[in-house]
Image: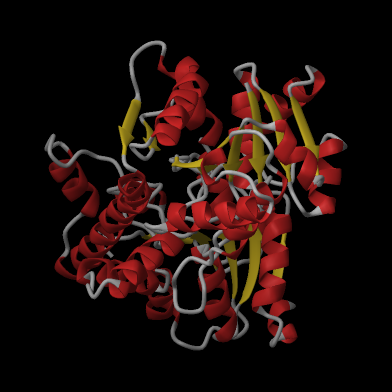
Length: 454
């Protein structure tokens, strides 16, 4: 099938590459010429395991192309995926200007029937706005309004495992309208996703608004579990309980399960913060205050300061002349995504207290440097207190303590004797509970986890 992907960012690239991998002819559009230049020269502007190799393979086979040509992109695909960004607006709502602009471009150039797929994470009611924008442009050219039919097909991709998630999905959600055009669109989507349903049916068909809400509901539920466990972990610290034992005790309940019950430094990235905020905003627009989600957001923001509070409790409020090694910058492992990363808050707070930071991340350091430059644009002297090194052990040299923020596998089994030799004080502040407190105590390491007898 001929498919166009509008927006060659995280979702668009993964979607385009994976659909090409199934034999489809895919045209990826982006209006950023630098991004398209990188892709056409064999590079990939984001880090995602397996994505670069898949793109190379399908470009070589002629099934995947990248361009800035809007007219060519509309002409190419019978199915047009809108996968552009929906950044949070000042009031927390999703900014739909890029989605609507993409829709208008389709309406300006479409001359044959098209299925328009909302792949971007968008609030309930967005499909109506997309359909209205396309219809407006079609009617200006004297074409029928039902030439294009809008479908909701939200993505459920985990950064760091997105290719695997797309190729072996837990579920595929498709929202269509019960109209002749909607039924034709449903059949097109069924054919497109048929290769992903060979072992068993993974597709859930529903109306468009339900599909739009499903995406937000899923992310809000996962964010709620994270904030809930962080609240319990903080309580465990106060009462002397071990949150790991609690996690196993409640996770073994089949009604609860173990997923997203790991306490830490708070969630970040491009999805949870934005989607929880946007869902709350949508509710307010309909006269409903979602109190649980408001609490989820509040807990998450406070959790980003937890490690700093532990460091301050141990060393005092004045951290002048102190230096901390920091392992992990990205908001989660297997990605270079720094959006809403807890590391940015932790670094800013430690520098504010006078400390210097030596950081290491296996992948995210270039992106982290760019983001931290923006964070410290009003404090260039503070930015000078931050350095980055390519070797995690080298980051420890002469530092007063190690701070772990991201649970990269490379950090799980370090040479602890070397860690102790390189640190001025054998102290670890572990924001991801990578190590067992008893084992650390036996090694002579002063260990501070999240909810683990601190």
